[in-house]
Amino acid sequence: MIDVYIVGIAMTVFGRHLERRLENLAAEALSAALEDANCNVEDIGIAFYAGITNGPLQGQISIPGQVVFSKIGVEGIPIYNVENACASGSSAFNLAVQSLRAGTTDVALALGAEKMNILDKVKAFAVFEGGWDVSRVQENYQTLVEMGQGVEVPPGSESDKPFSKFMEIYAAMCRLHMATYGTTQRQIAAVSAKNHTHSVHNRFSQFRQPYSIDEILAAPPVTYPITLPMCAPLSDGSAAAIVCTDEGLARIGADRGRCIKVAASVLKSFTHRGIDQPELAVGHLAARQAYEQAGLGPEDMQVAEGHDACAMGEILQAENLGFVPFGGGGPAAERGDFTIGGRIPINPSGGLESKGHPLGATGIGQLCELVTQLRGEAGKRQVEGARHAIQENGGGMLGVEEAAVAIHILSA
Image (cartoon, rainbow, N blue to C red; front, side, top):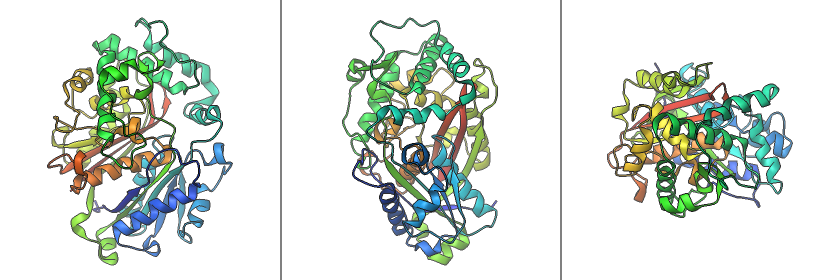
């Protein structure tokens, strides 16, 4: 298999950028990635654009990539628009890697950009309603929410403010895990407190305020057992990655000492598995495939970025990635295993809960953090000795799991 390297990667600060245009955010990420790669936009042979909200929120239903790229100097080359819900950025990156391995070019670009913060918050949340089969909305909702049966919901534990239906689904997943394995609300809060603490030292993070576990538990409720700091916010932002083959590295004269190898790039879709079959979860199967592709195992990973649109997501993905047995994620989080300095640090960036979640940019933002870690440039959030890292990014819901999951393993 042809070796592929991340030669340049960058992201904007994720957050509320009401005064900035989408192309302005994209231009910042691209410019910084080009500088990081020490190359020019003319060196890029193919580009993949990830964006979800261009159509529903800005009205750019078609060709969003061509429109955005035309304003920031990328034109004349093949441009593909990639949509895979919250996994769009990682899917664009996966396609960039595949294009290099197919010999299409020797330098490829994956860029995600999103403007989610608008005055009509209800309209912004409605974007998430397209992340499942819209012809079977009530059936989808009923199937997923029923997962949470059997756990008593305390009175006053649901917000009267608008929030995404996906948080109700995450809450049902929480309650299923609680009923099946004995996971507690405090263990879920431990994930959130850890990620908010990690984000304090990440200048690209939307939120940089630390929270204790008790403060997370006392925060305004969303829907039991989820409280507000356990949820990813609406975010604006962009992230860009430039990947090369050996020929591309030689052509642009890249600094090989800062190049990070893409040891595995996997994208898988859901199956109609049973809710009592976690060993068949798409995230678990994708992780196993990625480990096989890289010739590595979970025991070889020193740092991870996982999809924590809700804190429960990190617990589920820690199990899917093989860091703990199924059911072991909650106790491990409470012990501090996933904290910087712990057995396997997860989301040293602060995760989606703190760093932010601008859908199309999210996956590339995760990869940006891992490259920073593997280069030893993460400062106060540095995971010492990190040589191998894994990223997990899911999107949408079908059946009882994510519709799409991307897994990438990176090696220094």
